[in-house]
Image (cartoon, rainbow, N blue to C red; front, side, top):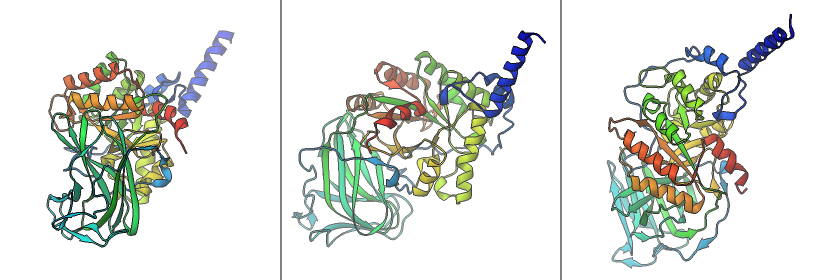
Length: 460
C-alpha cells in the first residue's frame, strides 16, 4: 500500500468518525469538513417523526391588546439585574393617590376591555389610606386597568416603572405607546406572580425614538383580584453593551422564508437565526432539511422551536423534556450543536425556564422590548415582533433606539410572502427592512454569536 493510499484511507476514516460524532468546527452557524457525509445521512430526513401539519399555525406574538400573554412568570434567579442611575423625579402625578377629584383619584381613570365583568374600587393602601382595586369574577377575554393620564417621555430613553401590589392571580404591566404618526401600540411587560401580602413590582423598558407619550398600567387579565399603590416612573441610564447589536430571527421554518427571504439576506450579507419545528420539516409549506442546509451554508443559525409547537406551560414534565431535548437531538444530527431555543407562543414560567436552561444557552420570548446589560434574562430575551402592519418608521425607530443605547435588538419574523396575513411580511417590505438594518451601522449577529458577545458583559 502506497503512502498516498494510506493517507487517503486515513482521511476517509477521520471523516467517518467526525460524522458519527456530529463534529462541527465552525460553531452554530458553520459547517465542518464532515458535512458531505452528514448531508447524505440526513437529506432524506429519516430521523424526523413527522406530525400532521396544522391548517393554521398560531403566530408566536403577543404584542397587542387582543393577544396578551398566557401566564409567563419571570424567573428572578435567571435574570441578571443591577441597579441603574435614575434621572429626575417621579413622572406619575398623584402617585400615592392622596388627591381626589370628586370620588376618583386625580389624574386616574379605569377601563374594562373585552368579555369580562371587571369592577373598580378603592381600598386601604400599602402605606396610606388608598389603593386601587380591580375584581373580575366572570372572564372570557380582555383586560381591566386603572391608568394615568398620558405621560410625556423622552424619545429613545430608558425607564423604570414600579408599584406595590396584592393579587390572587398572576398580573402584569401594560405599556401603551403613542407614536408620532398617532398610532397606539399595546405592549405587555413582565409578569408579577400572585402575592397575598403587599409586594414590590418593577419592570424596565425602552421608549422608541418615535414615541413621546405613554400610558402605563398594572393589568388584570383573568378572573381574580388586584390591588395597587405607590406608583413610580423614573427615567434611567441603561446598562450599555460595548456595541449595539441586532439579531434577525424567524419562527416555524416556513418555506416562504427560504423561497423569498434567503436571497435578500444574502444580497445584503446579513445572517439570521431559524427557529425550527423539527416535526414539521418536509411537510407542505415548511422547510426541508435541504432547504435548511441552504441557510446554514450561508452562515445562518439553526435553532430549536420544539417538535410540534405545543404550549410548554401546559405540558407534563415528561412531555416538556421531550419537546426540548428530542428536537435538539434531531436537529443536531444534521446541523451540529443547537444551542438556542424559542418557546411556542412565547409562553414560559419558572418550570419551563429552568428546564430550557438544562439544554440551551438562550431562550427567546415574544415579550416586547430591547435587551440591556443591567436587566437581562438569557431564557426570557425580549424582542420586537414584526407584523404585516409594522411600518418602516417603526423598524427605523427600533434600530435608532438600539444604536443610541448600545442595546441588543432582536427582531421576530414569521412568513415572507405576499399573502398579506397578519404575520406575513411582503417581500418588498422585508427587503426594505433589511436595507435599513444593513445601512444602520449596527452589527448583525445570530442569536448564538450575539449572546456569546454580550454574556461576558453582563453585570452580576
